[in-house]
Figure 1 (cartoon, rainbow, N blue to C red):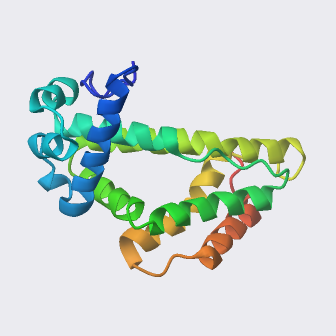
Figure 2 (figure 1 turned 60 degrees about the vertical axis):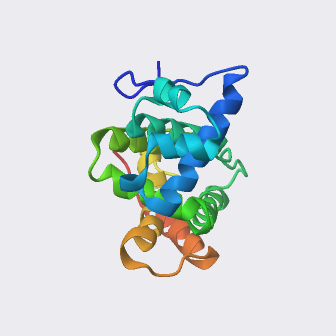
Length: 203
């Protein structure tokens, strides 16, 4: 059971309840973008989603449980990894996907709000860590494949390579405020690929 401390709302519903979940998660995302985690309120989310308050409180219980389910949904909706047969092309695709997400008018502020919330809320932090674990695991396959083709030294830590691609991009979003574009994405991918080939990520 993929739950945060067993909280309601962190298990995928099926059937008719899927429509309620979709409406509530979209409303929660809107509220996070507009007001941040501190302003997130289950009653307000229910109003935005046009769903009964008791339904939201029963299924999600807390704002942390709601954010955890939102992150689960975002992981499920993320694009699958690239498989071009080239490490450089695959890492470039990963970096460009990260940049597209972080510069999206909705997704960018949403990620920033969730990351900010994770710094002061343990359950949100755990949900965020799980989200990134899923995405890193997804893309690590392209590094493992490259190692299998002989492009990388044996023992290369695929997950560290993928982390190295996105780290400078998140730094720009959250710390420096410098522009994010495809040129920056390509540079991050090339740097990670060069370091991997040099054996930096051999464990």
